[in-house]
Length: 112
Length: 116
Image (cartoon, rainbow over all chains, first blue to last red; front, side, top):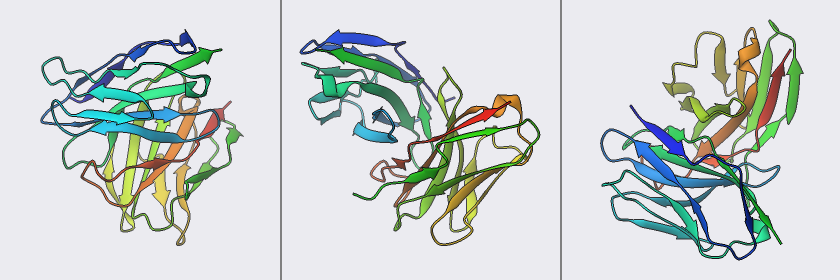
């Protein structure tokens, strides 16, 4: 089947610290992989995506690389800011399918 | 920037009651979705809707659930007889197209449904 396993939270970091949120997946075929972010009171927003092996998605200083050999798509940022405090969701979609499979979400709090 | 809106933000209902959750997708989008997240669990796909019919649904989406696009702007999720286990955050989403990763799904802020 298709599933996403995400690092348990919550994660609390000091400003300018390095962030890693782990995500691994199980899927048939060649899924596309996504990171979504949810800021307080808002909907999930697409942060970045990768559609094939070795692709790197990046946006707002965040990066994630599609690793087929380890079935992983870990989210990283070199220097987090207070404004990055949010819930981060890893997700996948199957080729040709509409629906997304999500992880449980990881709450990140960045303190000044 | 256009956005998906959902009402109400929080709905409390008694077990056995019918509830309708409302969503206004982005106006030129053609595909509509409902997802839910039970507290502490994963966001789960419920149903997708295109051209006035269900295009895909999950095992969760049983006969107690229905979706409708009653007019040109609203997209609703109805739960006929709510159960305690229906308590969750329900997210609506829409996309311009589907079946390719280039078609981003845009999500609303969610409706928190509490069944007592």
